[in-house]
Length: 399
Image (cartoon, rainbow, N blue to C red; front, top):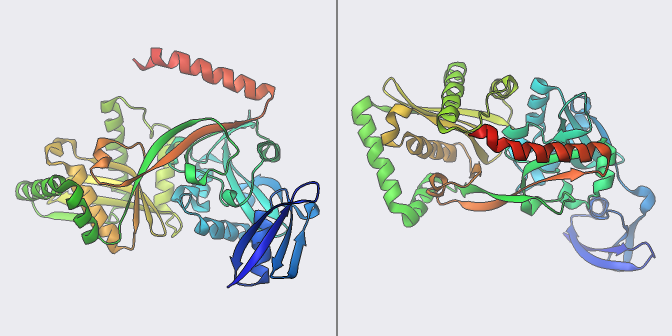
């Protein structure tokens, strides 16, 4: 490995800053320089030798196209950029998730920051309507638990340039991990998500005993009682009959939303179609895991999760309401965590919204950002006014 100096110049030709980069060779240093330079001229030095000089004429530029028009090379570079991410390395930020959304919705586009043949950043978005193409959201809307510009933290982003390239007046988003906030926003709301490390199931349980010994003991006791009453326990990491189990999960989840008076996330037909599509088209970058728990012939609980690499994202858990006194959700999760560790999962993400139920698992909390990018034009102003009106009248219809 070799240390290179990157000299960044301002518009007057004066050195603004010098930064060290450790790279394998000159070509790797040049790739890093193209990503890092942003709007600056930059010189790459190795010791006293000038390796390369990159100026404004070589600046990367944004282009926008439909998701289905991406080339195989661009898709592969999406995979490579995604593999380098940390907080944004989520199944919801993969090409495969966006492809599934596009198949059931048909409105997913991608803005690509490209320098020649090299893709430096990817900004996927979903237009709200063909009639009003200037308003967009993150792909999957309320069903997506993570969003961000892939590769965006490695390149300074300009809001005006980004919105102009996409033809958008308003882009609304949420579930953006703050450590990966490359979007040029300055206001919004912050919530919390939670994930747990899973070096091994035994190590995790040992850690949990130190923080909540009573909880671990209670789950084991209730699980034993359930076996005595309903028969031997069987957990399936991937359901043997996914169609039947998905139909049950959707039905029970919608009844749970109704019972708890929460908005029904699965009410739109496209939302249910998206779950079916992801389960039918398994891919290592975005793999749908439908797990089930039975005691004898009695269904206890199910969970639909999405996996990418070593990360498993809990998405739609549901349990048998008639057996709630046994804590079936917790029994399911303990079996799920044990099986996940055995399948090579090392991080389990419980998503946004940190409840007392989730805190029992002694995970690490992380901030999530919600906001919007806006251009100052008539459509943006009209959208803001309609949004304010919606917020004011919503309480009258929620009671």
